[in-house]
Image (tube, rainbow, N blue to C red; front, top):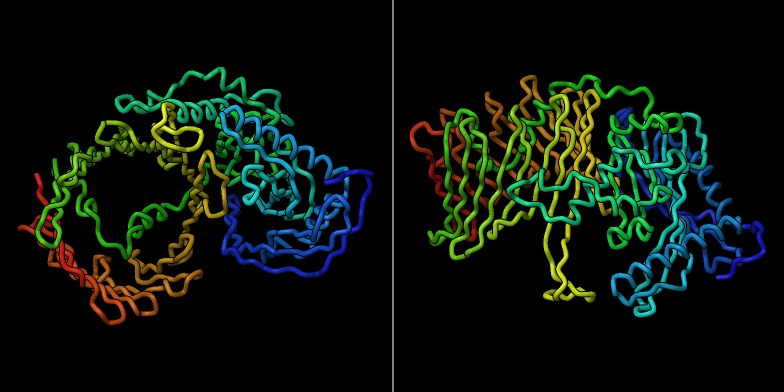
Amino acid sequence: MKIQNIKKLPILLLFLWINLDLNAQLTDVFTNTVYSSVSTRVIKKENKMDYISGELEFYQDHLNHENFSDALFEKIQNVAVQNITDKLYFQIVFNELLEKINRNNQIFSDNGEEIEYENPKFQNLEIKLVSILNNQAIFSFNYDFEVFNYSNRNRPETFSIQRYYHVDLKTEKVERFNPYLSNYATVFPKIVLDKLNRLYAISTKKIELNKLEDSIPRNHFDGFLSRLKIEEAKLIPYFAGAIIVFDAYSESSKNFRGQAFQVYLNYDELKTFSNLLPYYKSFYGNFKNDSKVNPLLAEIEEKVKKFGQDPSTLDFIDSTSKINNLEIELYQQDDKLYRTERYEFDESGKLILNTILNVGDKNHSQKIYSYFENGNLKSIASVNTKKELDELQFYYYKNGKAQNQENIQQQIVDYDNYNNQNSNSKSLEAEFNQEFYFYNKDYQYTFRMDAFKEVSREHITISFISGNEYCNGWRCLVLDDKLHVIGIKSSKHPMHAAQALTNNQGQVTEYFYDNDRRIRYYTYDDLYRITSIKKFSDSKLETQISYEYENDGKIPSVVIYKTDNGSRKNVYKVE
């Protein structure tokens, strides 16, 4: 690739684009605005630049909404064209790419892997709509290059260099956005260091079952923290706060074998950055996180979250059940026992231990539950036969509302440099993803983030109340004045729309969906205990479930499942 003679060269627009509807959406949680159906336009341009070969392609995010005019998208596209036709600008991007490739090759070399990338070739430019907060949008311009590995030239990798732009949707002003934390601070704020330290601890030290939270080191890993480069940390407004991102193949990424990594700061945590607020305040405005939340939101959500699903074991148990242990024996159609599930409860009726035993298999699994003093769930630890911790969830609350959840998985693996197991080198592999919650009046939002994977639009979900409807990302449940579900509306998938009939307790008795091709019938006894479920598809009975009880007990003694393939049963034993 030749880059010389700094000047601007013309580029011809062919006025040809293709719309790719990704059926995705973006959400502004501060204004409760949902931007539906974000699509991507593939724009072809004739190339007359001597430093880029072949036809030039732009992939530009686009959506139809009153806050986004066609003129605004054209303005953004013009900025992209102006940048890429500036040879000096492109030279800077290209030099940054070469540095990234060199760091990547060095990381592979340090890990003993004989992989080297070279000969980058410009591929395309992606203009991506990253986030919208308080009517302020962030776009990223991704310059994508194909980079070849000499040992496998048929499978090039894509390396990207990003530039960011801030768009005020009220004024349609477009300006360059510098996300690097070093632009606003000389040292990492303590709250950022604490989050990064926790991420590193989870990724490098096996958590001990008998200590749980306390086994994750609270002291700082000084060596790790000293290797972090503040000039590589990007602070990008996202969801109801911001993400601190370190790109793959950066100097800082060497702490994680070259992987990109990130942590999230919620709205309240971000406010502690007083030196950042002068610029970032436009993304958050004067929003107050103590705004009143519709109390019906939580009540309805609890009632309808399992609507249309078969009742699970724990659905039969509540605080009035007063049981210590529950054992369920699962039998195959030949009445052969193949699994036993055990549940243990504390004096208040909360589940504290769940054990699963497979007959004829020495392996078993357990889940251990712990709670805060106020009864809120604190953690769930999943344990294997060796009493080793496989998975762990932590739950956090603020002002009585769920704030976030941590999901941690750890595994000791034996891999050599060629990904062969059973080598002499053991290492810890960890996954760390989180869920963050944000509330704004009638709306509740959830953001799911993996510490080592790029976030996407699908990672933000929404639930809200509108009139007599409770809606989430893909359906709305229609409620009567007693908050009983009487139907389902689905805008994305009309075939999922449904109607329901309920009794005076709000229990569903008939359920019709998939254009009435699928029907379910539910029956109850005089104590409003479910006694049967019949599932029909195209007028054919596919599944029949029956529930048997002893005396006036709320928990069934036997549940029998019948299908075309035979029958099986679960036997419940209560202590």
